[in-house]
Image (cartoon, rainbow, N blue to C red; front, side):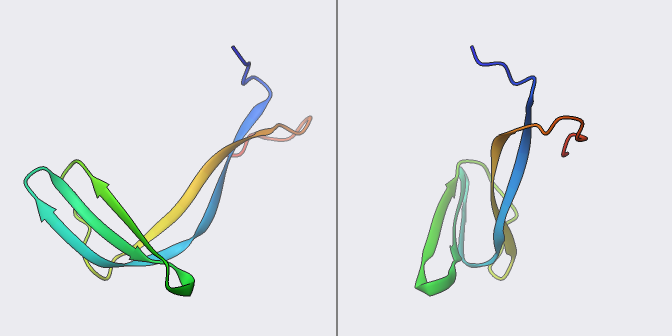
Length: 75
């Protein structure tokens, strides 16, 4: 198993994008966001949510990176 002792987690934020479609059902929420260049991202959350058309959602990912010696952890 890999040790995460000398690793930090970085959050890479791609941007905030508008919700263009939201369907709410008993078993969850399906919604779509509009990305640049005519791309649409669709998600199906299997729990009820408060996502509404017009909301801005942040699209991001987290990655592990090597810690710099003596650098404070990034939270």
